[in-house]
Amino acid sequence: MEVPIVINTLVAPPILLSALFLLSSPSSPQATSGTMSETLKVQVVSNLIVMPGYVNDSSRLDVVLDTGASENVLMPDRASELKLASASGGQASGVGRGQDETVRLFSGVRLAWGDQERLTLDDERIAALSIGYISKQTGHQVDGIFGSSLFQHFDIRVDYEHSEVTFAQGGATATTGTAIPIKLISGIPFVEAAFETASGAKVPALFLVDSGTSVELILSRKFLDAHPSVVEGHALVNFPPVTAVGGSIRMQDLRITGIDLGPFRLTAPVAALPRDTLGALANHEIAGFIGAGILSRFTVDWDYQHQTMTLLPNHRYAEPFEADASGLRLVAEEPTWKTIRVSAISPGSPGAEAGLEVGDLLQSVDGKAPPPLDELTRLLSNPGVSIGITILRSGKQSRMTIHLRRLV
Image (cartoon, rainbow, N blue to C red):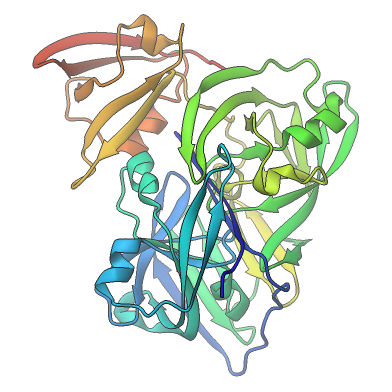
């Protein structure tokens, strides 16, 4: 049986969008019996929650906890190692040029996560799909994605500030903060929010809420074409194409006036705007994606049974939103992900002005070994700062200084 699948997965420093939709009947949260609560220490990498996970009898895997994935995902080489028996297949259409990629779906799979594999789900389904670009763009090994099935079986609290995730059943964990209604479509959460325009007007909008998107917002060009006041008075900045399922994606960034999420007002967030209108962004009724760049400013309680997400601001809530201020697109290279290479440069950007070229290898940053890529990405998002770097090009080292400034 061939299953039609649409996947919207794009990566661009520091963007990661992994909303995966299976075209099937909508899922419903499942009631649980008994009470339990388990808190795990996790890693927050480029605003993504990365935790230890296991598939059947696998060794430890690093998996992203992703509200935007209606299916669990495993790298194909990992699926081959585990000798999973394929149940069905299909074509994954991405938000790129429209090319398809073959996906194999495996059923009857056991998922486990956390210390000593204490949390488990049996008889689950997982898709084999190449997501290696996540590791390249974050500098952290990612073997898979655990998606909506975890949220349907557990109430999940994500504490970004303390790098902790709590999985609970039976009302074992009381929530604090402001509950905001969500709507579940095929196991994916959507929320009503409102844009503020430059004139102060409010534009209601429906957003997919995706903890697998590392930036603040991904906006739909079709929605903005229907509501031009949202971007009126805001400059669009071009960036080099990025890689995603389905091919390359042409991107622009802009800084909008603000967005209201329940009682919370987020001032001047930066939004990514793909030029193409495929996947979920082809639906003019969906304004776009609210990503972990916003979610990470809260402790978030997900309760799919009662269809709410509860937000409690953390210390980052009032911080100004900043984006890359270098114009560089950097990737990490396996096997250690410690080697960092320049993969693209925006013309006229600080990186270009400093003399960097595509293919340059970073040797040092401010006289020290380059930090992990996600840390370096944050460092390059500080306008007004100058950073000295040493690069290796054609076997020769060169030193240069990047004078960071706001590009959007």
